Length: 287
Image 1: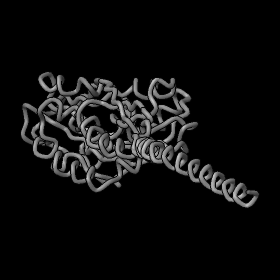
Image 2: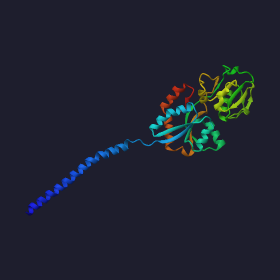
Image 3: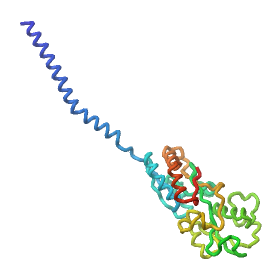
Image 4: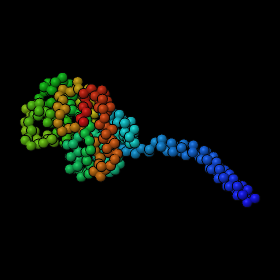
């Protein structure tokens, strides 16, 4: 009897153990797919993209950033573009924290803005170059402009200075020595043809064409006005030089991870190909 009791007890213990193990296995068989599906869902769920606002001027800068957006999105950066119609507001908005970056200016212009307004803004990447051009509805060549003719130039020191340097290089005027990249009309020492230089807001330069003999117009505003920046200018700036455009951010942000994603997304073969195909030499990649 004792032996039989012990044997029965062992059988009961084994039965209980087997039953518990089978029950556990049954529970796991139901739970495992749930655990796996949850894990797969978490693994495959998209990471929330970081969103930044970038200030641009209408035209090529905005168009290029539109080409950058899908590349940046694949790397977790959502870009929203805000267009500004002039060259003054984008740096003010950036410095105030209303946007996180801007793409519209060159280094001499940025340096001038920082010196004048105390902005804590830094360049983080070079983008493209826009050789500035002089256009005319009245003359086929700059030499055809009569003595005393009117020539409009941008009223900001950097772009106005670019035009004066262009005219100096073409032998139209002479400038004081040591004027650097930002000469003004006050720095003109010789003007044999007695040209009259009229300073206008860069964005309004295309409208000045009807009222002057020639107008210096930045490429982005020229393309907006339906001008061909390669074929239409009667004078055109050498594409080499300090006037390469850039991406700027606040100095406090320059080492943040999103900045690298933005720059790497811009500096891709796809974007370079887009610039060359879209603008056909009017805008030149500079990276």
